[in-house]
Image 1: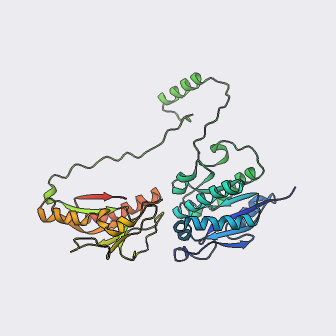
Image 2: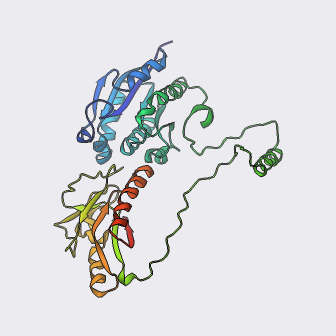
Image 3: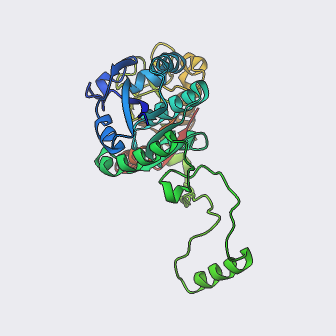
Length: 349
């Protein structure tokens, strides 16, 4: 039996080209194995072989989506593979989005099985888990040793067109697909058993898991807004002209802090949006539409608020992971508190 032919997709970091400074490299094709493909090839144990590796910078792919997709599809098609693998992307948001996007495109265009791997909180997982198989990994490349066996195992089953079991059996992120199965005990009996275990405080697996959302208790209302120091925070990507900190258009890995002391209006010449995924024309014409500095300056003059904080914080919400969002907020919230800010107005797109 001939080996399963595999084309592997990785980003600039795992190809050993560089980090963020090389994230804008266009797609390139290399014969054979590169980076984590070496571990994958070994895990295949001779049943499959990576015949080519496609490499693309995360920023390039996400900022030139259609063009990058077409280029990568052409490169993959050239090798006539039986299977396509992307990643693992772990918790790298733009990488995860690229892996999900290209896997779906390959599956639809070339009609071959595809699989990728990433952390459950990677935005790419939420975007594509219903469309493709995504092996669940840890949140960093430190978990590569665990990720590769799980990815190779599922990849081989897909490549051999074997029946794929449940997420628990195969290690992929649940896709929301429900199948009828036959069990020895009827539903009512199983429900009673679960209820008894619940009443006893014992562990039991639910047959119908529900989504788990954070509950955030609201803070008390501001007692006197006319004496309050108000700060602006935005996920709408408003930055000084030229985006000096190079905040990414999608799956942001950073946020910016900018001084607006003395600024009364965010003009077209001085501010813009770094945000991808929506038409930026109106935000670029007048960034106050996303970050209302002009209105708050008026309110400050009229005594409606006590003071507008001299710094605003900004990032891009487009595809940014929950983990990164929490990390950003934890960092700048400390600064806001130490600066005596009483309330924050959070704006988006």
